[in-house]
Length: 224
Image (tube, rainbow, N blue to C red; front, side, top):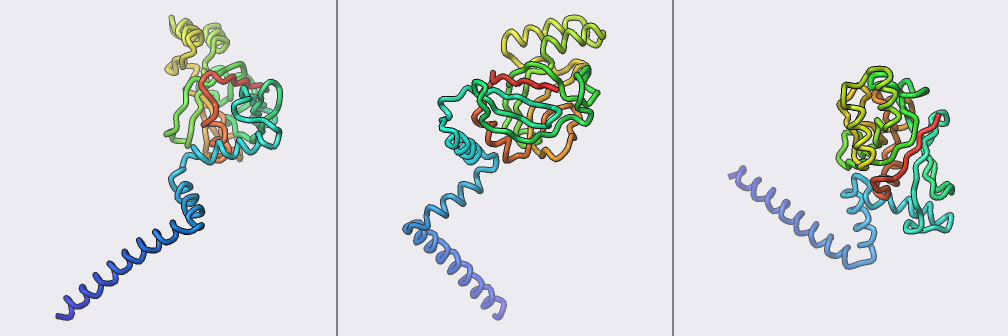
């Protein structure tokens, strides 16, 4: 009898808690506090920064008197300074710290040298479910990388041609060659040079600001 009574009391408390919670939520949503609650709910569901990231970037643009619709974004990565710069027609829009490959300086010659490449690239793919938060793939290896690979006899017959064809078609290049790839800009921190493949790493909150506004085809220049 005591067991049944305990269960009954527990059920009563549970159902009362549910009713009070629902009533409190309805009451809050009928007051000015609903804005705060709604904002907090959006934060919980915006785990990839699809809403908050572009909003922060827009605030940066507001400070220099521009709108998102007016700009033509380009990316410049300065390896020596370990920084990523967002430009529009030579105007600096934003600057972020980055991490590079473990052996960052110098031209990337193969997939195992842990160097970050240098050259002219563009964003050729986007992945919002990447293992390192988000991923902006750049079209490495590009034709210049392929030419070096051919001179070093690192490429198999026909691979240089496939890389050139991908460049001309604005498609992701082959990533199964000894030159390495896929390579690009991803999250998980910019405190040090830590990537094994030579990718560029950013703090997640910074990457969210640019990931959602950059389109495939956005130019990416990587310089020493």
